[in-house]
Image (cartoon, rainbow, N blue to C red; front, side, top):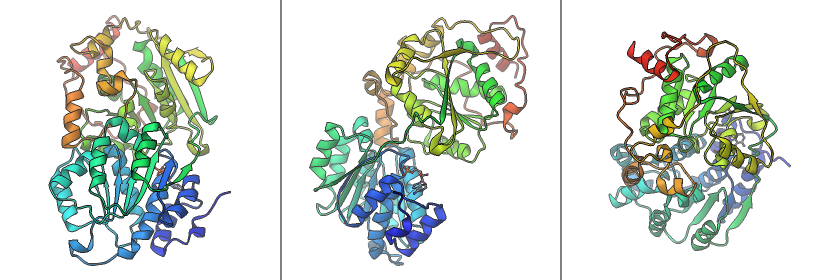
Length: 488
Ligand code: AMP
């Protein structure tokens, strides 16, 4: 049964905002959670990003805060009443943007604080007073310690993506933050899974919660057309360009396994005339937000990303997803292709399988419980094929240790346990990130160049033929790229 928002009796300013967002019926998590939160009960919700859970907690929470709405300019009249904690900057930013939209016709103030950004503007806004504070744990603690944030009037706390916060090691930070909050409050916890750790967290901090579980979005929906192509490493870019051109794909995510691979691929595709942007853990916060924004506005055709950088991004309905590398963790395949074919739209998921990917394909087959049909790529021109990757590239990416996994975009703890997660920036988290950073990449005049934004506006670039390489066909493919740059 679908329920309409009109059945909720939301206050007029909130109902108007919802109508302006174009929402008609509630998603399952909204239909179940909103009435419970409106009653003031604690909630333990199993729901992922993409299910509409932000509105599920934000709307009832704003409705209950309306009694505090006031036009006063005095900061004392705008204490923090609701605190929303999230594991990563991107998630915090996305949730804060949604909260702002839902609250736009009210006088309730909201603010997001996360690491990797200057604390001063955040401090100034905190001091002016905000009712809804969205934050990542590390940066919030910095503000608490600096006495910029006072939390003794918090009535609602939301622990969003709680499983990921625990994965990242935020439990001690969460415990400290929760110790600053009044005992009398409503606590809402959302998590993709109810692991024993999550249950322990819930039993410590939630009172008689209502448990709500909604089925996860079907990420391997039949609406996603999946293809696996056998391609030599040096032919992957060409295969990608050809598929994009032949299928007339407007925008796509291109997933790679390593930070260096990400930067290199984006740069190469850009040079070949595709409007491309790279998103990986080494990008500054500002660069990441700009990249995301440019992609959402359609200014960028290809977003090349590592799993860490893409996790939690609110971009879910791209026409196509390319797995330029078979993911190291088979579960990431599900996350990656879940970006396409959403909400009944048809999507395309293309995976390039290289000669050394047999084990990863085996893992994928185990997870998907089926034998994968790996097709050859029929190139539409006669250019010579690339050579088989002999492992030297992986070694090169491994930096000083010689371990190819060191080029992965994840901290060793998560990497070694086969897990990864997006991470927060900020002073505290920034330190962690630096401690866990992969060894310095070998000095290379190519990789050490700063990222360059697209030089032309021409889009979508694949409609034009890729520029032919201005080098002899006798030069090996790897040399070709270097030669191309030297000539510029
Ligand atoms: P979330 O899971 O909260 O990140 O929401 C995912 C996306 O769904 C966001 O872009 C929301 O704007 C959108 N959304 C949330 N609730 C609804 C709804 N009831 N109808 C349509 N779209 C929605």
